[in-house]
Amino acid sequence: MKRFWTAMAVAGFAFGMLAGCNDYNNSIQYNTGPQIGNIAPTGAAAGNADLLLTVNGNGAGGQFQTTSTIQWNGRKLATTFVDGLTLTATVPASLIAKPGTAFVNTLTAQSGTGQNGLSNTLAFNIYGTPNPVPTLTSVTPGSAPACGTSCTNAAVTITVVGTNFLPGSNNGGSLVTLADKLTPMQQPASLTITSFSDTQIQAVIPGAFLANPDTATISVLNPGNGLCTQSSCLPLVGGGPSQQTFCFAIGGGTGQLCPTIAAALETPAITQDGRYVAYASEENQFSQILLKDTCIGATAECNQSTRVVSVAADGTAGNADSHNAVVTPDGRYVAFSSAATNLVEGVPAGRQVYLHDTCIGADGSCKKTTTLISTDSQGALNGTESILPSISSTGRYVAFVAITPSNTQKISGGVAANVQAGPNSGLRQVFMRDTCLGATNCTPKTTRISMVPGDAPANGTKPAGPAISGAAKQIALADGKSATVFTPTVAVDGGVVLAVPKEQ
Image 1 (cartoon, rainbow, N blue to C red):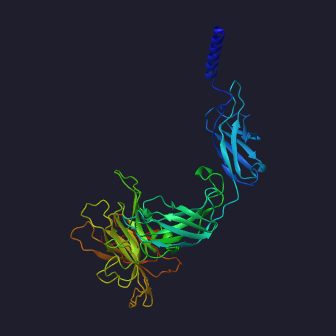
Image 2 (cartoon, helix red, strand yellow):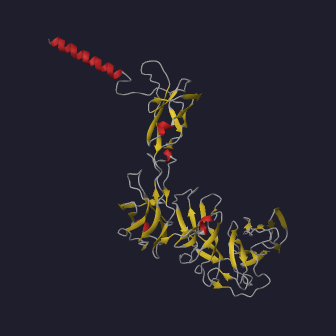
């Protein structure tokens, strides 16, 4: 009897060893056919008509054969063999009539034990009814104090009122987003929602976002409808951000519907290596000039940062709109036009051109400064507005347009010009300022380069600003009918001429 049980134990051990040596069993099914790299499209809206599905192989497991078929939820589709890595099939509208997820794979006939010929499986998303776009009618409160370095308990709960807000069960639900310019965070940030209905959401702005005086923007974002919110499943159907954006004042002011400002249409300025970008952006209800350090190409440890450069010596931002930023190749000097009256003491009313030294790349003795560029000791710029600067590589030379008002014209900022109409009244003139940066035994001076008659030339177009070369030896002007006081000039194309100033 003892020998019988011993024999049974040995037999059982041998059976177990044999089972362990198999590379397949009834509970695990390995795919042995050509594998799929991707499918196109990856999704469609429910109720769509028939669609053509393309399956692309990645070469793993071999190539497709003329007998290979595409399977949709295990159902074989009428398949067209394109080549060893491509199959196509028409998916009937009846298979995508309802929202959900379908699973796509291929079958390539193979022979031999365990050779099932199946590929891997990819999901095809069938999206439901498009989500609506949310609307906003109010955000309260609309402001909060700037908390500086004491922001631990400074969080603020806001109430957002509107329509078409979606619950979290609807593909993730509506998001309340906040974006500002000076807080280091992923933009825009999604706020934590504490209370929800289809017309009202309460969300929390963390204290860390309230450290600096700034103007943040509040919006609501609805997800696109579908079973997947990842980029690999796009395009989603419906949803999107609210068209209305509310401004949230940090450190003073009141919240309100954000205005649409012209700064959004301006072309940013970028340094040659792409590291620094200067641009106009809304800050505290005014368009300010910002300089972004992207850290592209930086050799040492670098943290991305953004600074406001349309500021006074004490760092106070301009009290009116600034536009038209230009920057030197090293990012140190930024020129711009501004209607602000607090950047330099005794500045004339109206838009003026300024040069800001950021001290980037300079030694520790450098002090950030903002200098008035559109000035002339001989009085040629009295009563004018100055716009559209262009800067040389070193920052020493700045060219700009000065608009001489008529005796009935008002200067931007609400101050009446009340200047005597002279021979240049109403004309656009191009000037170049030598700041003497980097030069010795040099006196700053402003030279008039040309004069363009009026804002509306005979051809109906408006003259553009000048463009100065890196070495400041040439200036391009856009209006072939300009009356010039320089020689020589070279016609470039149509209304564009190249000017060489007499004095350098």
